[in-house]
Image (tube, rainbow, N blue to C red; front, side):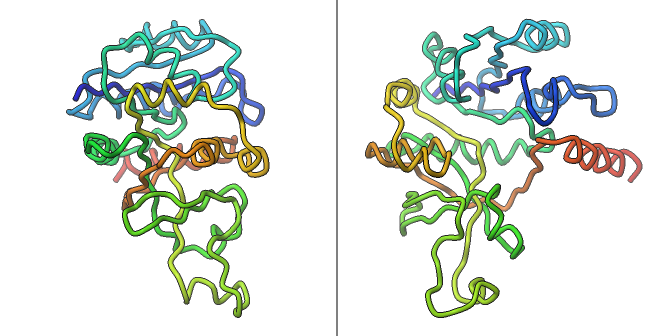
Length: 249
């Protein structure tokens, strides 16, 4: 099945102004992500979906492919759907535009999952080993059934261990952090954009809960790959430091 990777990118960012264009050793954040995506052999094309001419022109000027979208989208899913509706692809990968260290094989693994006939929405998770992450509301947790279908996503630590203090929870059960890269069968993606917001989504501010509450299955495969998302100036400096170390290894 034909696969297209779409990277949603908007210029406005509260914590890091013009984040997609942030410089990391002579290359912008968005182009670092774009070039990692082009290393994915099973993807037919990579497209940046953006709401701003500045990002559009930057990607084009650096040899990439970009498409302008509406400025009114409230989520990356809506933004990529606007682009996807005019493509002849069967599978759409929504790749976050703020992870310049994303490993191409991690994207390949998601595409492999999406090529299964029974999978219409796919994503990934990784085991939590740091207790601080377990109780960090910025780290989204996921529980799954025995077939790797998501049961629930939450900012809370789930499942709770009733009879033990928080510091003992990780000794009794495994916990998994959700990784916010998604795969969609194209027709499913287009249907998701018409769904009404739900109570769980509003409570947790997690879009994927809308899909679950409307009855869609989300397959969530475990991965061993880790990456760093850039949301703040401090995150940007951390990633620059990692790039610097890699350059002089």
